[in-house]
Length: 386
Image (cartoon, rainbow, N blue to C red; front, side):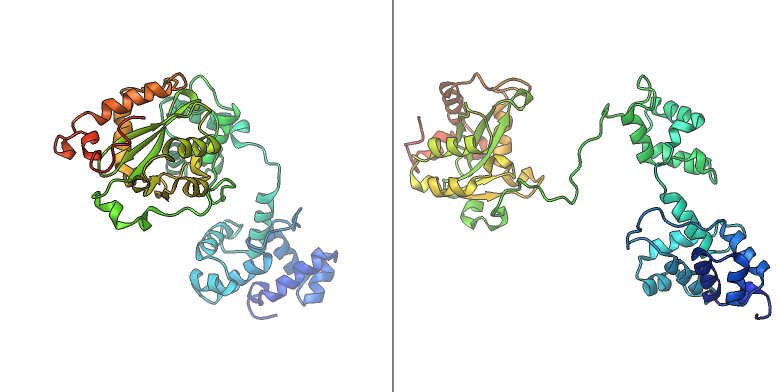
């Protein structure tokens, strides 16, 4: 044994000792096998805290016992955490966190066996809910939520004012779960958004109903960008109360001429397709050049609409309403006739025609105080009335 005792031995020796113990060998026999005294082996065992085996398979993305031994060897050799991370094929943040946690053992130095046992303990399920068993912490969070603090603010406050007390710390997710499960006082503890259930998230999950073969707005012809030619339209839906009804809105980019699409049968993709084909298919071909829409699923059948109408349909980027700003502005004008929060189901085709006529015969400053009907007249008289 080298001068200085068992702690100076290569880490391969205690590694072999623990493997023998896990294999069922008694402590004294395992110590003799690796060439150390029984007391040295017992000391290793005591410093490790205990010797645990995972109760279920561990995914490759987590650190293994061998990874932790490699970290300890790297620290002995005075290598940085970034170098060690590269050697074991993990992110440097993972190694930094592991070293920080692994120094919480009996001696304050990184102990790979103690750290591995602690990781196994953390993975055990089910765990008791922290806020269910800790009445003090639960009361504190109740109070702060009643003062309209957010879960993130509460978490930061606890970490700053209760350092070194894990029982009095709680991450935002713990607070959200307690809120949504009813563990906290519903009369006082609530989010500022008043939300009482978790909003469904689909981050990173491809939607099964994504629109196929969308043509991006950036590929729209320059002719449409210049607003010199009629026939380049922007479209959208205005939706009624409870999303139970809708009206399609089309506006010409050059003339600001408005057409409303009657949707008496609903506004799902098949109904929108049929209504667009029926109500625009008779327009002059020169006025069916392009149609720009957002990525609403009501245009799922855009390829069929193109085939049946002659429109070339383009889609805006997600959350980019300014890419069809003319239509957004027109929808704002239309809300004077179709207020938000009201049902649109009782409006007839005749009602929509009357609204069209009022907007199309109203002078517009952007057109030099001409009306959209006047601006459209050189291109076609067929759109003036239904």
